Length: 237
Image 1: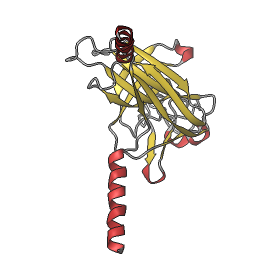
Image 2: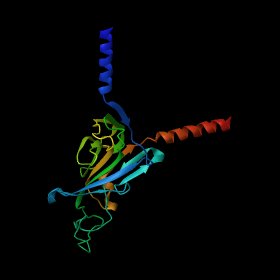
Image 3: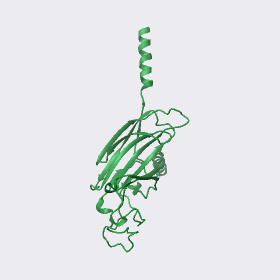
Image 4: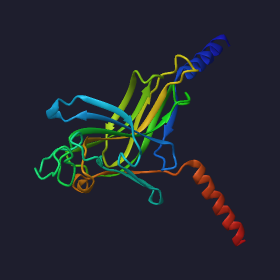
């Protein structure tokens, strides 16, 4: 009896010490998506970090198509023609200090991040698995797409991550996140997508391609659809 009790306690302790498993998917546009941009100099200019900034979803550039359960991530484009962002590569700019326009090469490398952030400790101390499907990837060598999970310290001073390239087909990646040192000061867990490459003038993006991701309606939306179907059945009866 004592041996059996000891084995039972050992199994319970092992189960309690194992991290909980949490699986997340790719939601549609009504989810609390966030955008963030890291800007770098071109490699030939040293590749140094320039600045970080929150960024609008549409400005990343991401286009949601909820009716067809997908979104498209395209190369970043900036409407500001200033020489900070564009070069006078054609030699045809009327104002060399504002050369941006069709045919002009971008002057920065932009790391665009589209993600969901969970900052209530519900994913901290768990093994998070991010699953979904890449429908297509037509990016040229000028841009790269990635899928990531990141686990940030409360003040964003450090983070752990797992990151994989965008490849057509199903994907699944996991990260064992850290439990918060102070439950009142939660860690931030992010999962999402990243596009990296030179900025491109808006009319020049098509030749650089894009990548397309399948989305899944939020459970609440699915529930409403189910209730709607029940209501229709009742009306038909």
